[in-house]
Amino acid sequence: MTVNNTLVRIYARNIYLYGTERFTARDGFSGIPTAYHDPVQTHAATTFSRPQLDNSFVYGYTNQPEYDETVALIPGA
Image: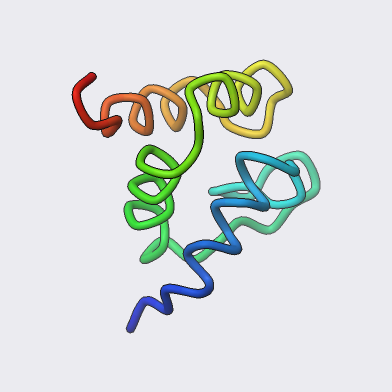
């Protein structure tokens, strides 16, 4: 599957900032395609602030493994 960079940005925003999508099917959401998981996490780690990433976990938009994987990708962390 070819990864569309526009969708990467949209998925990242919708997951980490708005909570309107999830990586995997849970909480009544269908989940994004698996091919987008790594690119979305990388985009979030290099684009969003640490407080934004923290909020995504606190509000339940991401679960512990997703949050940990994303934070590990922050440059210089």
